[in-house]
Length: 112
Image (tube, rainbow, N blue to C red; front, side):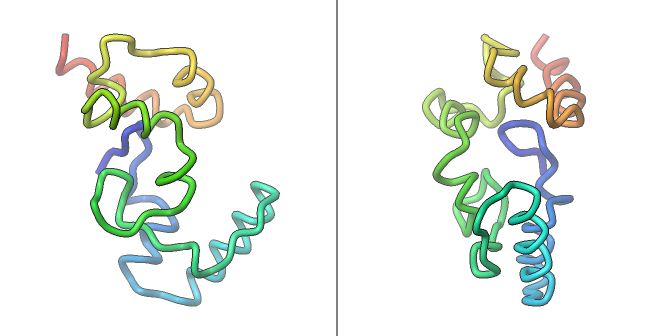
């Protein structure tokens, strides 16, 4: 399940903890992400069915992510379908998530 930005939701720790309904894993992920992102992330924040789902979503993906918002505004499944691929926002994201570029590049080939 590839997200708007190219990350694989099925490999995301929040997604995995949610699908397993594992409160211990939620607590572990919240602790790790709080340290990694210097943020106050609580176990109850770790609920996500994937950024393209209509279900539960991690607050960053639902409320903050510019790439997801852009895809929604343009009615696109993911950034690879955009005629402006790869924009400056996406290029900056690729610097921290090179695996997303590989996934979107593979999807992009379907549009060429």
